[in-house]
Amino acid sequence: MNKTFFRKHWYADIYEKQVIQADEVNFILSIVGIEPKNILDVACGGGRITVPLAKAGHKVTGFDSDKFMLEKISARAKSLSNISFYQADAILEDWGNNFDVIILAGNILLNIESEMPYEQAQELFIKKASESVKQNGHMYLNFDCYERPEQSSENNEKWVCFEGIDDIGTYGKYIVISGDYSNETRIDKSSRRYEITPKGSETFTFETISIKHFPTFSQVKGWLDKYGWEIVNLYGDYGKNPMSTKTTRAIIWAKKS
Image (cartoon, rainbow, N blue to C red; front, side, top):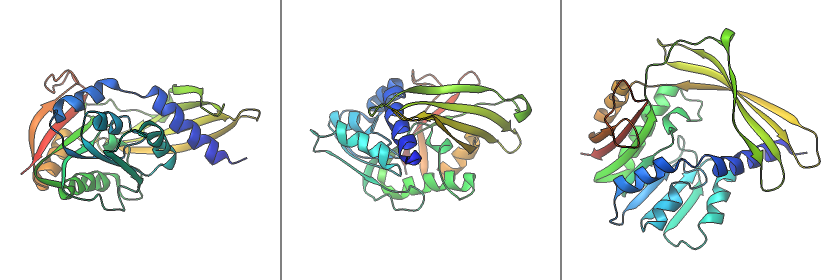
């Protein structure tokens, strides 16, 4: 049994079915506007943003490191001639250039997969975006931004992020197990567990450690300033309310100056 195939295929299929986040998609469509633009969707996954942007009349390029996710775009974009996508590592490979808009959506700053130190990788994303966009072009950036309490693995919690049966009959659960979080380092160390049951086979489990750095707004603002980005609009939620101590996100629409 190819356990990696069953796990990754299940994750891509269930993620695209259950993690729709229509509020973010509609927000992006609104802020990008109706005038056709040349757009790059970084770490595009299965195309939850890429495809709606193309359907709205924009020319959209997406890339992702996960081939199972990219297969989902292929199925959804057959009738669209203004969309292209390919497999690439966002850290190691070039993003291209001359785009009107760069999309860094879906909390991507907290989901970077790299051997590079986390803060360095996050800054690199901002730098690469600045190198790929036209002068006076724009970037959409969205990430969790709030003060979290300290957390210890001695008091961990578990919850099922999603579960279900994929398109080839595999049943699975994706479980998050909380761990340690330090306000000083802003590093979260937790676990992710897959419980996968291929059709007609026994259940197997796969567990991995997840390490994420939660940047402060001022830290991200410093990176934006360093690479020539000017914040045009700053919101705390998809209702376009201002960011405040009561909101949990930083949603940035920035212009390359």
